[in-house]
Length: 199
Image (cartoon, rainbow, N blue to C red; front, side, top):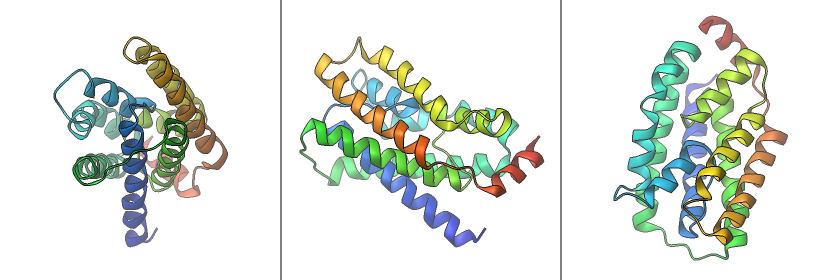
């Protein structure tokens, strides 16, 4: 794979996810996985989303290195770092005031398509994304199923921290994210070669 194409795609995927998360954050909504957990903790601590997201993913690098290989781990580390940086920049320089229904729809779509770009270029956004890539490559479990399970986990935690209205709009974002990943994500052929080498 062309190196320039890969890193440009990873950059673009991180921008899409960062924008989607910023839209959701601006409306007080959540998304699934480690990002969703970071968004919940943001309301309970003085740390920003970018700081929390970076810290939450540190333990998952060992799993990625041991099960998915060096290249995937390095790509994922850089993707997480980029997302954290973009999130900090958007927090300071991008102001969004949007209807919560539109926020949930657009935010979920942007995060979903951003994740697909990262998955197709041997990267993820850590945490449960690492688990979804691992389960897909080693056991044939489609990433959308793991994403749905992550949605339910974050939703269970969100029940005690968010208002019912915000949870409802967040479910809209969850649904669009899972739908996009389920319909458009197809593991590239070279990913299987990476899997064999890492085994």
